[in-house]
Image (cartoon, rainbow, N blue to C red; front, top):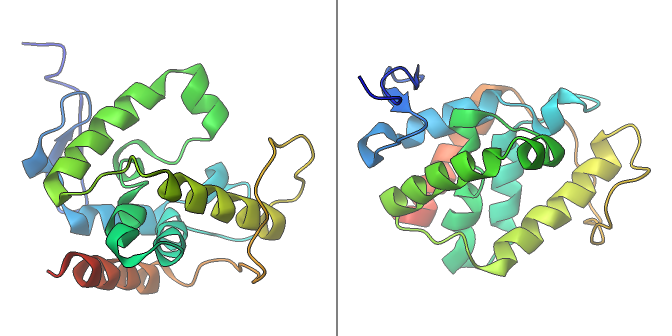
Length: 174
């Protein structure tokens, strides 16, 4: 028995996902869409439920066509490890696990998350979400200018999940 034998979770579709040693065949876009649709941003500290899937859709929409799939999937690893706030990720070195899972997702779907425009779009969304959904932004790191449009809490998860899958098929031509 290795240290990885018991380190797995069951996904929505019933797959075993070994988060310390993930394999491409354990990754499923239906799991990603489902899990992210149920997962609330900012560890739930928002004025109404706002999903990671909704956030990811919005990030993708800010990007040029060739980066939209990567933008849509930029937080896909969170489907398997949750949306932990940045301070928690940095404190507990969970970035390494997230990066390992992200690399498998990138390989599986043929995307590259390294383009700085993806992080820019993500940060613009964070600024907009913080303005519109958080009770207090005092002390936050310097954020870019938020979008002019207001973000409201997510529609029901089934709608967001369907929108996520629709965009995945559209962006990946599959």
